[in-house]
Image 1 (spheres, rainbow, N blue to C red):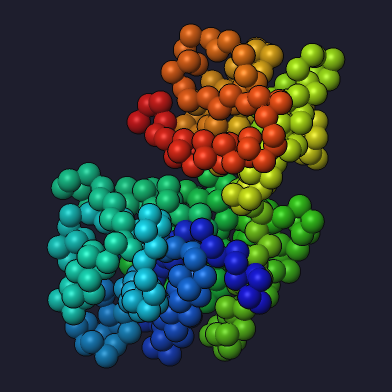
Image 2 (cartoon, helix red, strand yellow; image 1 turned 90 degrees about the vertical axis):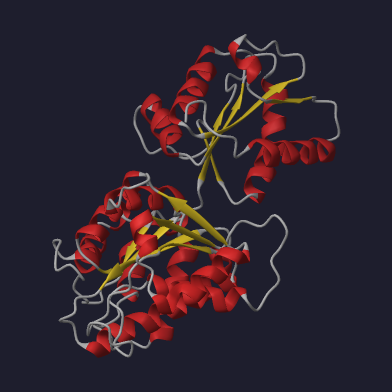
Length: 389
């Protein structure tokens, strides 16, 4: 299990959902215990959380002994306890991202104010606010979907269903649990329970698994069943860890010279196999390269632009000054993807591209030196903002 828990590292898990005040108290308590265990495992093993902060409605009005109908503060409290047991690493990404509005921040309950202040001071919390004066739940959810890598939802209604659409539109995994909690606003078409049934029927629409495990989606989702709160929580969490470990890695798409009759082909091929592959793989990405890796489409052009559209990183090598490479580079830049540009030493860059950082590699430089220099270049340039904000 420990090895699978490494799959949490570096990923932001968005925990979202709610419960109806009409739901049995024991079932809501079970949900909070489950969220506590999941949030603890994620943060302990190097992952992060995407959450919301605001009011904390309870099943019985202001009765503090009554379970909350939302789970964000439970996750925040759990994460804070884990983070308080370890020293913060200089330059590390914040473990928690909270998206809120001015109004929701004003609604943070008095009994949560100290926790909120402690998190703000900790350096482990990143706060993202939507437009001043706005309190749109849709705007908050759209912003959350930008930061989350995996959506884990339980209960809820319209909000959870909207989030699932936002994540699947970005081809990010959605893991809905089957716990019958209802929704705090008594809205939606069934929330996470409905989504769980759809995911069981069409797993590839919700989760993308590693190529060798693509047929296991329905089985892994079936193992996640809470059996209406009767399944042991440790078993549910263990099965979640297994599913997360089977998720496909984010894609790094390669744009490069592929014509083997061209003079530069051999040098480009060595650069990608000896330098780019190990560097990109070491950062946790799965390579996709046309003509080398398995294809899913009958028409290559469709696959190229579809993969660029959803790739986490696009590495573009312009050696040989091939027009198709520049078209694909332009699409990636226009899409706002994270782009790394490379070229063989001596390649004359066109005017507009000269303003974009480019890693120039030399085929006679020792491979270990080029690997180190390329890794440094990626670290400095991977998270540059897009051309248009």
